[in-house]
Length: 579
Image (cartoon, rainbow, N blue to C red; front, side, top):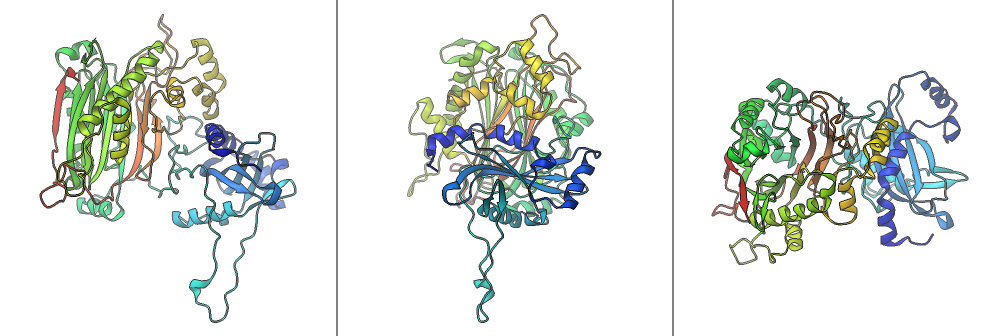
């Protein structure tokens, strides 16, 4: 088969999400489509017709070479586990570029994959399976593993094991906890949403619902040993309404003592945009959040820009690891030239954990469907300006002065941020809309109420268009959206806008991140149970690698180590920012 080339591979992988949804939907296979099934296994299939729907867990998706000789080709491979009384695994393969070739579906012995909780072992076994995929007639099979018998005098270390895994065009998705959630659609079909973030290997399993140790010393010791922190990022346009109770927030959005770091971004927070022009303070909201987190969490930093607000908390055990705390705001609202009001704009909160730089941006971008180009411009303005003010590189050899961005043009500053920030998250009420009429959007929502049906609706999403056209958020990624549009709802209901404006339901509230080895996304969801606003809150759970030894420049003490607890507890309020 001819090499499709990088451009073709890139174009084909752009629809990998479609394959993933198709493969997940077809995970429970008709009897006629299943190869390698024993009579006993077939009987179990018949029994499933009367059984409750199985929970499907995505174990792997990527591209692997299948077959040999003239039949060798690149295939999108998806491996899923159908969890239930009789758990089984299925492998789906669709040719990467030749759509005329039929897709393959086959069952796999779960014993070939299971790592019994050991994810390094599971990764190795999946790699072995990928390297042994072949064709047998009209079926796809996993060739038996060949293990040579060692000679009598050979040491155990000389025994040949699995062949090296193929290098996938698209790295495998992260493994996710199989938890159900009332705000996630099609729970009876898909229990865990796959991550879109590329990573070198499946990430370790982390139960984000489990509490951190009660002992602070144990929390700190665990982070120092693993180099990993759990991070929750939230965005919510509150429509200037009173916040829910402490109990409601803990139950639905901000669980207590389950994350090391929590960053909450809000828009139209506490007061309307107009009232916030007079009083931008968010003391009441910050006070409510302090109640939610209690004395086990300390405020890292809070910053308000008119009605937009961002705040970060850290588990008190990790305060000694926090350094380089800084925040800035960029206004892009009403005004002329560089002088703009903060009715629209973004806030950046930067800090380091154990020397690893983290930057969280929360923004409220231009409204309305026709504001597409303006939103793209605001993304570049906010990112470039925050990069100029917040991001510094490690000093050059022989220097103690932090390196500043080499250029002031927007494109260079955006690239500078992505190059010099280890963990970057960009979210907020980004206000990107669906390019559909209300009637058509409602029809698709009714006809495709499950996860798969939402994907066709998302083809009309302006943010995905901006990324596709490289108009904004280049180099950033978003986990798959498997929840209903987050805007616009009638107050205290799940009904979309019934006002005279009849706004088109849209995913205005989003969270994106810079992909890489330092960041794995483990959940991306909305919370339907919080109905006090016309927006639904959205959160993302990340596992971030903070094992790096060097602190960002400017965050070092005289002995070269991070300044312990530097800058903790800052709060700022402003109504505009002059650029």
